[in-house]
Length: 295
Image (spheres, rainbow, N blue to C red):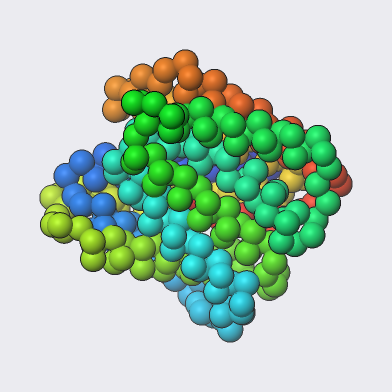
């Protein structure tokens, strides 16, 4: 009989493969469609699919619990995270954007200590400092190699970390489908905000539209696999496999976009992933997660 940890780890890897493909599809589509319009279509597809899943399960699509204070903060952070992450995918390298995104669990851990009062020992603070140093290595704000577009990736990472932190403070009564509907509705809002500031809102051609439809479908499947992963095994065992997303991103960035990350970027990524795995492994007694928001 397969153990829950093995099942959870397998679903986590599948989810990360899905999210990596989702990111690559979106970046590919935004080569011929504006980021705002692309985000709008992506959000509409994901919202429609999760609404259909909730209706099939005969549950409320918009339960009252979605409008509690923690979930409203979650929606604000989701909107900001999606907005900046979409811009990062459109204007920054996929590999670099994905590497910076891996720092989100470190920010969540720091936020849980500072805001929720969770205990974080000195060793984990040091590990988080190493991870944040890795982010600085990737950004390189001190020299000519600095790319302002990477600040979009930092903004997206902070938004997703805030979303995850708000989710931890929310009631456990909501299903993954209901949270998925809420999350993708914020993607629609993020897309609408981006279009307000775009010089030209470029509609998709047939190829870009197909890619955006596929992006939404893959995103919903990946989110479903992620939820199954976090509900199947122990968090300390399953969660580290989320870093498989970076490996998938590096492979797809190389094969599709001909990206060649340099040694400094790779060292920064190793510092982020290593510190993240250490922080998860030393987080104390494992807890079952009722959900894991999409990223």
